[in-house]
Length: 209
Image (cartoon, rainbow, N blue to C red; front, top):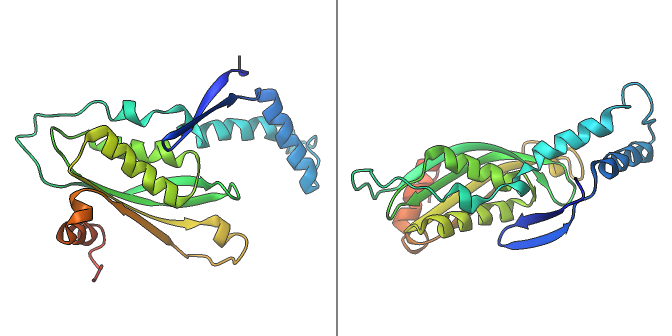
């Protein structure tokens, strides 16, 4: 049953490939345990392959979710509200596609509605759809933005992502506490500097031009 063709979607491009069986996935974990120099049959590790595969199903569950479906329902009965909608400090955990180690941070999302608004929790769920994949922070920022533009037809979208990458903290240069910031602006946020500044000041009150 596991050996089915699964759609692995990242951004706007979609690739189809056969999904390996669970048994193959667990065997791969056993191989890695042996490769690092430990014994996969010792008491503390004998069930680790199964646990790792279970964890991967949760950590990378975004591949099974559809952002267009998430954003398909809007609420129009908002008394004509047309101003900015902002949800900030949305926590997320993702995994670097280069080293498969975590990067952890917060996303800030704003948009100007046209015909209606979406439920606020859906913005947090949208972040998770793309964060729970192998990622770069730049792609994560772009994918959230594109999904909102395509799904809502907004007058403008602003997305800022701040994160600490364990591939810098745990290995390599080992600089703990270093944060990376990425942002993308469309519509009025891109064209009007005053709107961009308004977003930045709401997200980071200490921001100065």
